[in-house]
Structures are given as C-alpha cells and as structure tokens.
Length: 259
Image (cartoon, rainbow, N blue to C red; front, side, top):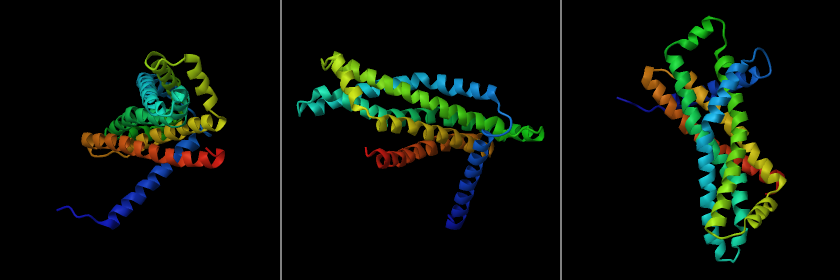
C-alpha cells in the first residue's frame, strides 16, 4: 500500500534540486576550462537549430496572422486599425516570439535529449564512458547547452520576423491596410528596451531546455519505462520553468527600462 510521506518528498525534492544545480554548475564550468568537443557542438546546433526551423517558422507566421486579425477587431472600435502593425510587432518581439519559440523547442528537444541520454544511461553507455576516462557531462551535456542557447537566440529572431510578416500579409490582403504603413508603425513602436528584453529571454529559455532535458536523461532509471517517464517529465518541467522565468525576466526588464 502506497503511503505519502512529506518528509521523504521533501528529501527527494531537495536532493533533486541539488543534483540539478551540480549538473548545471559542472556543465557551465566546462565551457571555460578543459577540452571542448566542437564536433558535438556543431552536430547539436544542426539538430536543434535547423531541425526546429520548420515548426518555429510555422508557429511564428500563423501567430502573427492571428494577432493581426484579433487586433483589427479590437482596434476597429476605436478607429485605430492602422496601429495593427504596432500591436503585432510589440507582441511578437516582447512576448509571443520568445515564449512560443522556447515552448516549441522544449517540446521537440527537451524530450529528445531526455530520451537519448536516458537510453544511454539505462544501457550503461554513460558508465562505460566514465570507465574509459571521458567525462559524460563535458561530452554530452555541455555541447547541448551551448548549442541550444545559441540556436534558440537565432530561432527567436526568425520567429519574430515570420510573425511580423504573417501580420503584414493578413493586414494587406484581408484588412486592406497599406504595407508601408504597417511596417512603419511596427518599426517605430519598437524601442531599445523592447528588443533587448525579447532577445534576453531565449538565452534563459535555451539554458532551461538543455539543462532540464539532460538532467532527466542523466538520472533516468528503470529501463524503458523509466526513459519514457523521464522524457515526459523533461517536457513538462522545461515548459513550466520557461513560463516562470519569462515572468521574472519581464519584471526585470520593466524595472530596468520602465516598460
């Protein structure tokens, strides 16, 4: 019979947080010392960046389309349909672009990292690497973190551009707005703080996606069922942390730039 013990739950939680912090610390420390596996880094960049490109483009484009349609309905009441470009640009660059890109990449790559590393863990390949004198964190985790942070930064820029293009397409074809007016209002709406805030978020999101996926993969146990469980947990926790950190970074940017 299963009995819930608050004490055991607290111990497991604290232990998991400690293991996660140690994994992150060692992985980040490896960036500044010792050997770097550049071939693995570029391989992960291709898998994470190029592999995620189609879903990021589609998500960004159609998000911009929906934003333009919804904005036009609301702005029409105030006779300000011409400000659609401003609303689309601010929404995509400040919030929807970074967050949706992070969530899409988390769904695709956190699960992939957890399943790949989890399979290596349960088949004792990681133990074999240690026996041969190779640091698994330096070889497996650090390249994934660096690749995810770098590629998510550029994927967010692409998502922002596609979202703005989608909004422009809907505005010109369905709402009969002037294209130059749309892009002019979109450009004039963005300030330095908006752009910085929108580009800082993917750095945190990329770190979360990689570290959470690698952590659950490296700690997987229980055979194939354990790998499946680790994969599910990696996606869920990565998405929760991305949304939480988005709130904290947004609050920080408001405190710094005032908007």
